[in-house]
Length: 198
Ligand SMILES: [Fe+2]
Image 1 (cartoon, rainbow, N blue to C red):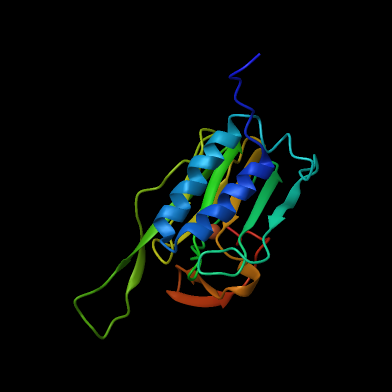
Image 2 (cartoon, rainbow, N blue to C red):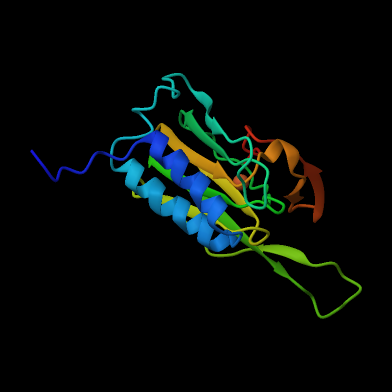
């Protein structure tokens, strides 16, 4: 038997991400490369096949890199399993200087996106307005570019969901913002493992 292509593996996925960060500092190129490889890995049945992923609901760290990241330090690969979620009040957040490549392997997740609206009256602060939403499906990754378009995730309210986040750095080390739409205020937080409450 010759010519059989070996299946893509979690280990190679991590190696390819390390190479993407080593090859250049353009976040768009890095993120697109990661999304393309994630799509390829999904096709093999990952992340259910991962030895690091469990059957219980929760967050699982697949990889925390020591020294490769957007402009350093280390990226993380996280997988989440959750049951049906309550519909929440949107609380958009950003990712600081990080980007997140986000993929849904089962179930669904809606990422409502927001845009800044700047009033002509310069005595008034800008406000966030909801933009077009997105519905990443089981087909592959969804990109959340750096410092653009705050988002508010909402997991499926009817079915179990498995999703992946590759963060370009360890978000425990990155200050970012949560926006409160009701009073147009924001707060800062740091967390690598927890999704902000929807
Ligand atoms: Fe996020």
